[in-house]
Length: 489
Ligand code: AHR
Image 1 (cartoon, rainbow, N blue to C red):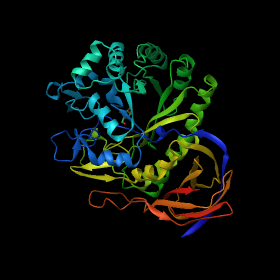
Image 2: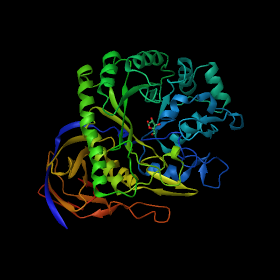
Image 3: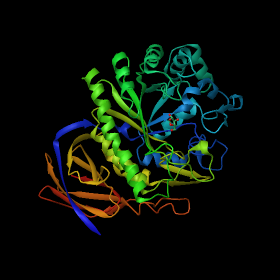
Image 4: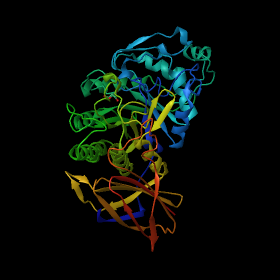
């Protein structure tokens, strides 16, 4: 195996942002087997559960410290009427999930169940309200139902349904992809809808909402421009931008069978998010120089053709080392942009697109992407610090090595990816602004097509990696196709 030398510099004195834990967030939609069979199996299931929520999923989410979960969609959100999903389950309406396979949605997982799941995981809920086919009153009442401790028809209804005390809800999305499945609106139209809807989403009983407007699709810079120009930062806290890693929408390719060329194309698409975020940030900086409005990457991840024999409307795909490299690269990007990027939600948490977990009956598998979140979790709530890496182009503008670094309580975390399928990266990293004598490195590496399946759940797992620290210089070798995390103190 050949190797290339890569020079790095980490300067802890140069703080470039704060890494909100929410950057390590996830997304759960009523789509395919994400909610039903994934998160929720019902109280009467033989699969171990707490009030219907799978305990294995709760434990796995806790291990990677899932900080926030977005729900109920996605496109589903703009057809979701929350009152269908409350009260005795036998009385809840069944509806057609028109976006995702036309299947029956029996609404047995609704507001109470979602908030209970978040409580069990210990994460913040991020609820996406319905602008596309909902009303201002409906959204306003949902917020009141969830967050008010006063006496009102909504709070009485909540109490009748078994929840006496109001919940806390911070993150509220006002519409999803309003430029697409959420109403195919022009940005000018959406701006007015947003202004009206948000006016009636009140802060009740000491709860403070963080209101998130629908943001741009990928490179739609005009959307960002119109939103930022027409919504006063006093009325919006964040904008929700979506970017999927898909080199060609009409030729998405398979998740597990791909050529080296297809591998690098996917990585090139993943790496493009860096430039795209930079351009949206530049627009936001012009209208909001004080950085009041956060950029939320509300949906991101790889999107391939569905696995053979599965429902095309369920978006079920496997997850290989390629996906792990994408996750490692993009999370490094979000860390580096953490001055503006306040949250990111991988699509989607279980059994849909780039999931961290796959389930089959009572078994569950942690995907390579799951392990990347495990490797990166120490970045949560740390200060992002300057991290320079020699940019050595590997193929089509895909960087050989990507990196990010953060510091919390005297502990430094550096995460890195090596995209090359053939060459190792010999890292020589100088540390400034901190004196470290202890080092501990971990790696996720395997042949690029490797994945974890129900009969081989541990094929791709985290291992330890030799690393040395001497005279404040870190040296280690990243194997080809690897994601690495280094802890220094
Ligand atoms: O994640 C699948 C879908 O992709 C979401 O429902 C939608 O918001 C996006 O287009």
